[in-house]
Length: 321
Length: 286
Image (cartoon, rainbow over all chains, first blue to last red; front, side):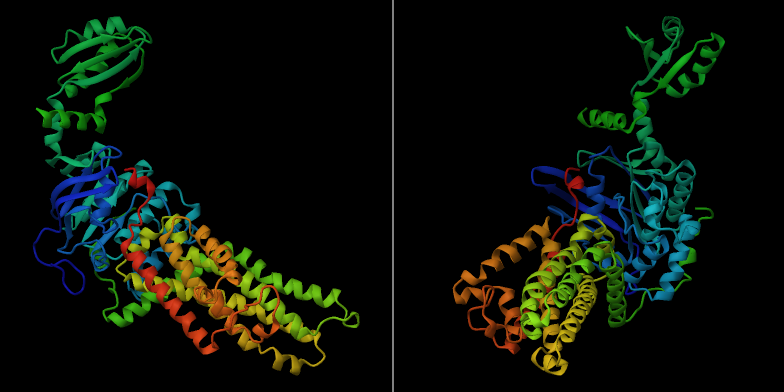
């Protein structure tokens, strides 16, 4: 499936895992995962400790499967260096040769990849431009912010123009503008036909990049498919909303009248209300009006269910039923 | 990240070198450069330079505090004694330990090894490039230090020519270079394999090799020091507490053995790099 130049050829599945398991002694990292990843962006969603990094490390050939197998472009990545001709990996580690400048680091990585010095310089400059680090090119990495280091990691993963890109939590530590641009970049990779796996534990980050997701928890794939299916699944369960305000009794009396509100629970202390709604969108549309028209002072408004952990909880329950 | 220019732009740029041999050469040189930049020219080097200056300082001290009229031993004897004690047992070993273990040990501890292992580059070339950088850097440092010490001692002798004949510089430089290379390969393997390679390296040098004088003759040959000392000119004739009491190996055989040890441990380093999972504790805990 790979041509001599190292580019992927043919229309096979770029990444395929069959019964893939990895355990560290007693601890299971990845448990019998079977997965086919096709060109485009695939979001790997899971809470911390779900096994996302282990799975990416297995695909990148950094870990040896304990059982089963994974193939990248038809090649088993463990022990193979040639797979990295068409694979770019942005690990989640925040570590660098800190005394090097950004451009020197990229040039070094490209030279190690077999590029001539001139080509390495050109590609390093192009990657810095893509990652938005041109102005910081000659700055020591040690002086970079977390967001800049994330961009540099992204740049080293794409500098040799790989067909497959693995990005482990690439948005972590980036400022909102950086996030937006990184998301645009990742989407563009997908549009160009590259195979991109991007991991995150934040659902809306993944939603912004792709519709295709794989949900992991405890080393297993809980669900894979369209991100909207996950959203629909979420809507099958009442969404919890927590509000702290100055007149909780008054607000609760208003809210129980709403059809979408399943329950309202007053907390004994602190003026808190815990509401369950089956139509969160409608609920959030109507809530501001009630608050403003009755001059209620809201201290906080959170949705405990809007975390990725809640998604997994639902998915686990779904699997059980 | 302003305008997103991705692979469409990249494809117009030149690709990697097509010829395998030429590409390997470029990759090895890249590993040499990276290592020189980060290890040899790193912060540790200040300490290593100071260490290499210790024999120079002692030589200066000896020249100034031991007046010739006061029955100072001949300078060639002073140099020979000092060479074995300071260069062979002390400076070369310590420099080799600190640099050798750090070649891959630092990459593992700093986690930068992931960047190396995700390049389309054979592991052999990573080890070769790193070791070449080590060899160039360490041998240059040690031989430069030796040259300065040598000239101080030569200057203490009225007959410089006679000193040079009795104490051939190149023979001594060869001992230092071969010791650095052989020990360096052993420590590079330790750096690639053990979690705390410095402890393993110190245990090897200062426990195993320090009991050398008390070992049966056949076991003495299981130490690198045996072969290094076999190369020290006039060493066995000198005697003394630290002397190598057993019969030395022939210099040609000693050179060969040290080079074989070096090659064997570099191969083991490659095997370690290929077979070990260089992941991190955090990931192992998930």
